[in-house]
Length: 142
Image (cartoon, rainbow, N blue to C red; front, side, top):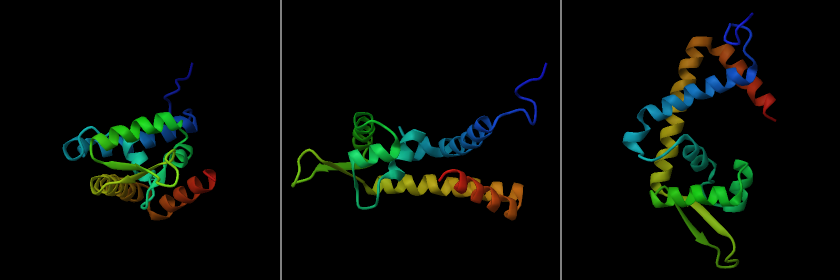
């Protein structure tokens, strides 16, 4: 009987999940001291917010979440000072969300950590193989 943990038997979803898990672990390793209360999902949502702000409906679609679920996350982030939101004066049903300066700092932090992980991976794989990995992942995600 073979184990699913043997080299070469693990399916691609598990391998990708482990790679993402490594990135998440690096972000969370120092996150709490600088940005208490933020989880990985919060960093992802903060990064999805365009610099000029975005509508809850549009952000929910991009994040593949319900408007209500996204709204709850945004409310939490607003309570912590990472986002702010307003209703549009032309249509009070529309809620526009923006990152605050603190939200921008959190996005810069997560991008910096991801950059360090990419540097480590490029060193492990070699620059050519790492670039090929990036290209293949980009191709598969279209």
